[in-house]
Image (cartoon, rainbow, N blue to C red; front, side):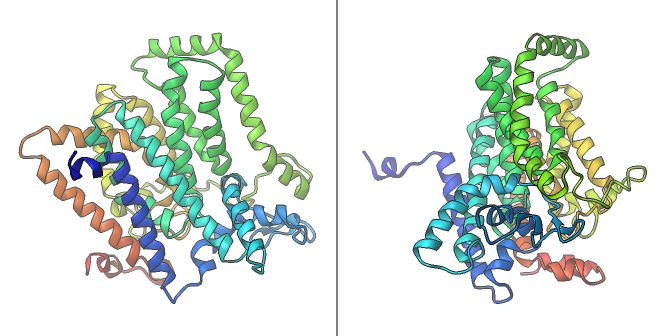
Length: 424
């Protein structure tokens, strides 16, 4: 057996090796960035809002009704705007960090380097698993080469890269993982409806909704998966009606997932359900800011993630042909873009690219893979496609390292800021 046979690895293994190297390289660069402390890199602003459920739950000296990164509520209380879904996923890594912290007698329990590192490792782990299941979903439809390339691009050519390695405590990496898992398990329910397939389906979806309530739109994929006609929808509804007990089971599981959050709300407010964003609402519902979402100069989706232009073209074409559940995906994407455009802050405050669409990239990966496979099969087109895709990757990596929050959001915007991205 030759040396080549000994070292030959599958594309999936190469993908994850490259993923790990890139993330750790990013972490190394940031550790040498004198502008920011370790805490600022992984737990500043909203990232602490998601994480702080853990130290305030496990350490008696901290009062969970008086969280630091939260809004005032009543007399001498605060209410965390963010839900506890991210903290639930971070919990295993938090416990390991706690053990390390205790073993090394590190001070500031819950907020030292061990805990900060656990946030980064959690993000790496879940995105790793999300990419794996995304690859498996694509592999059901497309060739191994196309599935591998698409999965690689989802990480390297979108701001999923930034929100995995640079801001790992934000919710988007976790939602990406959960919705990738959900998409993978949807077909299994219709192949073999039962308790196991129902649990596989509802658990990631319920956790995704707990993390970001707008993720409930992903439920439409379950309803419309594989449908091509109104008659098919009627048959689908009849089939689900006959299995009402499975729907009831899924509702019960979703309720269990939400119990920790309901318990927190009740402890702080005395109510089981609370709208924690208080004065932040969908004030642009009648005048949705689509231009801000899609082509806004500071973080427009197509401007900072041009890979999604290819995916959108493929989605529209597939929706016209009514293939690969594209009509369902198109409906979901139109609705989520409208919801985001209706939010009082359609940019979702300061962001590196349009972060509120990261969790929806697994849906867009299907039409993207179609475009890639279609183009690779045409003589003379393949290398042109590869050239464009390499440019998208380079552009995204440059953006990730050159993005400056103060320059983008705290000063008057100038297009010269954007042009800095393409300067070496």
